[in-house]
Length: 467
Image 1 (cartoon, rainbow, N blue to C red):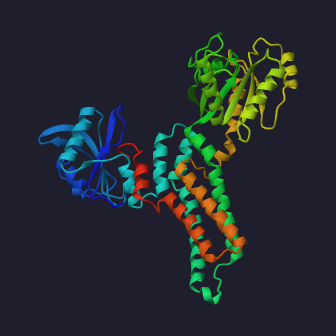
Image 2 (cartoon, rainbow, N blue to C red; image 1 turned 180 degrees about the vertical axis):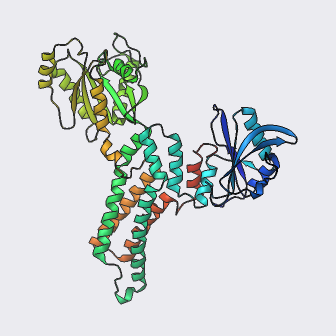
Image 3 (tube, rainbow, N blue to C red; image 1 turned 45 degrees about the vertical axis):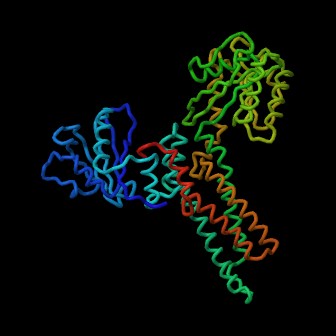
């Protein structure tokens, strides 16, 4: 992708505040702003201002003052984009914003496309591609966990890992291809045992990153928690109690919830997407049948299943429903929490008797709650906090959240699997070199060392204007 010579401009802040920022970047930034900006100190010339300097002045159209502003100067290469850049802090009137942008464009700037400032930062070597993608994730982060992951990636934690892997593979690929040049002389420059150890180490790390995608994606978009159970067991009441608002309709009539209802809450810095579903039962109601089918789909998509039963239910019926959920989630790593609801008026001995008869498998939890009066909900929140492996997240381990990175690392792992197999079966070096080169290629795609205009277009078009 060719770096354009155009100077771009765009608002960098959302509407609604008292102050707005307009960003300008490109070779003509100072010349264009110099035509409309008049410093309060008449001895100051915009072209002479040093970088990282803030200047007070007016934006004018002819002799008419549009606004009194603060203008911040960034000189190449010490700016976000690596180009000469200016940020204008003005009052956030829609008229003022529109007028300043109009003046900038009339004097030679062009309106920036979504993500164009970050795209220029990438093209000018200020960020690699994975860091650029993390900028968008940081802007859209909705809680502490997603913010921490995006910030770590933007600061280069993920890039350092990938670049290190790629460098090691490049070294060995070069040695193997050097051997091919001396094929007739039967010379080995690359130690095969060392190569196997390196390939094994890189594959293990690639697999570890691939496996982190499920938790990373869930942390980024919210941990999906589906609430299931028979009709009138208190699913909607539980959702309302957790959200602390009347989000779902509560009724004594079975089958009130016909469709999945979703909402999010943040518990201990992690976002959870709670999904209230139609009750699990046999029914001839066409609409309710569709709702129950959606319940099955949501169970398949969830990381956590909350199966809600009543204290008045028999242990046999609870075990039967629990087994049904197990069969629907077989082969997955979903967490199942069985909630016995409506315990507010139940005697204590009934709880212990029921608990003794309920069959639990490994990693399953049984909790007694009352969605009506809130008892037991704090224990549920604590359990949910344990479910998402906070000890893993709170460490400095790299967690990936980006589907493009996941797919690339999956291909890296597959290529390295072929390399390992080739080394063990004494496959010709030229074929092994091809697979190593493929792994290097996919690692390079992550950081942007190998990329295409199509990939860049897909990435940056999802950015907001002004970033």
